[in-house]
Image (tube, rainbow, N blue to C red; front, side, top):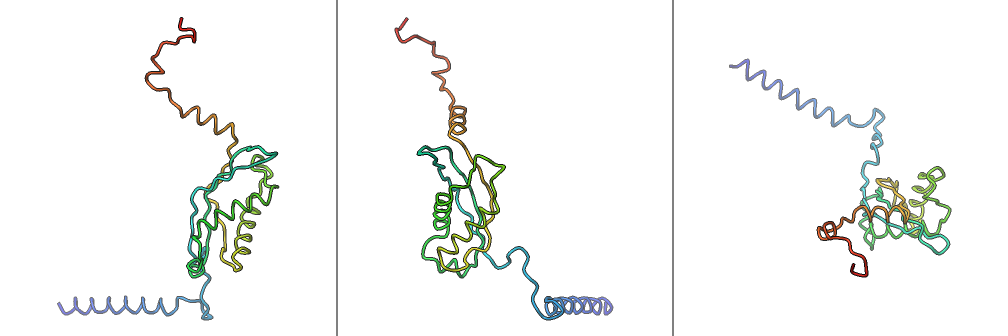
Length: 173
């Protein structure tokens, strides 16, 4: 029984010592902290679905649809007077309308990296500080008006009356 108690005390002491040692030496050898992996310490703010109509030659050609994630320092987000998601959505609208060179219908010339950097820089310029560190894209789509019409037609199901009603001509014959 004494051997069992001594073994239990030895295991407990070794475990406590290992945990204490790992916490003391969790930094690098030179004493500096290691860089956090993938933006440690930043908040991720996910936007709602942002839908921006693409207008060219006074007609709507389609809709840019995006869901973005912004990384920002929590202290700076808390100091904002406007809700972050509203600020980000407004800036996406403003950025897309002020940069007409983005052609979402041509996927070969669309540069998502310049889109991300442009959105980040425009938000940081607007708030006057480095609020946004990175813009991550969760979803990006471009739907033309024809795509939307075709989808609406496919979703519309005829009612039971329309399916079984006999076809009549307008004259009533």
